[in-house]
Each structure stands twice: as structure tokens, then as C-alpha cells.
Length: 262
Image 1 (tube, one colour):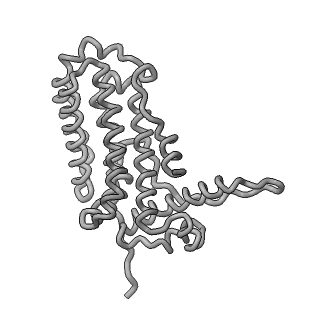
Image 2 (cartoon, one colour):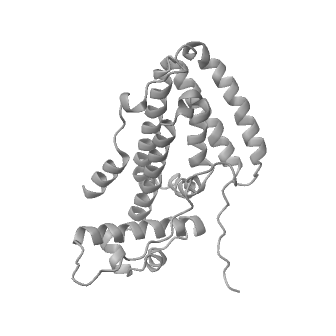
Image 3 (cartoon, rainbow, N blue to C red):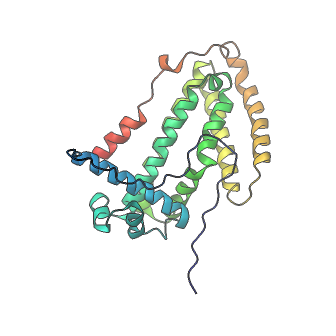
């Protein structure tokens, strides 16, 4: 009897908008006559195709069933070429997961720059959280984290990726709230509670998909959170300082390139 492929859980539909679908493995760019790409460009392109393919296989089969052979095939490279770029399956998956969360950091920065996020910072943070936890990036990360729970080396490698995402995201939204006059203790309380409410719903959504209820309850939570921060922020909330004049976060794109070149 042929073995059936494991079907990945589907992310909650219509929970958020603007999150791209899982990346398809990218094809090699054609080389026009008389043009030779630099080796660094070819290396960067090959590594990106491998990361995209690794995410696709991770979502379909999970970490335990992911093989470098299948990833290489989907990326259009030989298994030997894959091993040239990534010494192990673990190294490949860690780099692919880091890609997912670097994109999440950049998306969060875009959300935080919008006027709507400054008018309603709690709703802005909820939107940022949902763009990660109610979409395929969370499913891919869960596949890795479940295995890492009993694999100390995998946990040692994945933990810095998760900590970086959480640290920069918290820094970003704490900055938004503090610039509106919210005291640090209240800002941290609201962000931590909001994060855990959204993350808990995301786990629940893996088997029980009730988008209408999630949205309704998150709207009710936003009202509660607003009552916590509003007394301190009400005098400033109509005219927040532009993010370009506030504290600047490290460029996620530049740090990603620096991390990979090191």
C-alpha cells in the first residue's frame, strides 16, 4: 500500500491580509550571452532557492520527514550542491526558519509605521501578531519547535532565531506605546497579554478554525487593553511622533545579509 503524504494543517483563512503565501522554490535566472554573474550572486540565489524549498517541504511533511534529497530536487540543484551550502538538514532548516522571521520583522516594521497603528496601537500590534501566528510562518516554526523540545542541539540553534524576532518586535511596539505616553510597565503588560492571547488562539486554530469568534474576542480584548493604556496616552494619541524621527530599529535586511556572510 503506497504511503500517503502527510497533509499540513491549513492556516486560518481570512484572519489577516497581506501575508504572502509560502514561497515557491525559485528558478535559476537565465544568463544572457556575454554576461557572467558573479559567484556571490550565484551562491546567494542557490541558497535562497534551497531555503524556499525547505519551507515548502517543512509545511507538507514536517521536520521529521524532511529530507535534503527532496529539498535539493525541488530547488533544482544536486544533493552535493546542497551539502556545499548547508552541511546538515538542521543547518538548512534553521536558516530557512530565520528567513521566515526576518520577513516577519520587516512586516511588523511596516505595520508600525502606519498612521492607523499610531491611532490604535493595540489593534496594530494584534494585526502584526496575527500576520505571523495565524499564517503559514507559525506552522513552519511549530514543526521545528516540537522536534526541538526533545533535541537539545536543535533547540540551541533555533532559540536565538526566536529570541531575535521576539526582542526586535517587542522593542518596536514598546517604542510606539512609550511615544504615546504609556508607562513602560503598562506597555509591557498589554503587549505580553496580547501576544499570548493571539498565540493561544493560533494554537487552537490548528484544529478548530473559528475566525469569527477569534476576531470578536480580539476586538473585545482590544477594548480592555485600551482602557489600561488610554488614561496615560489620551493626551498624545492624536498626534504621535513619526517613526522616522523616533528610535530606529536595526535594518532586518542588512542584518540578515551580515549574518549569512559571517
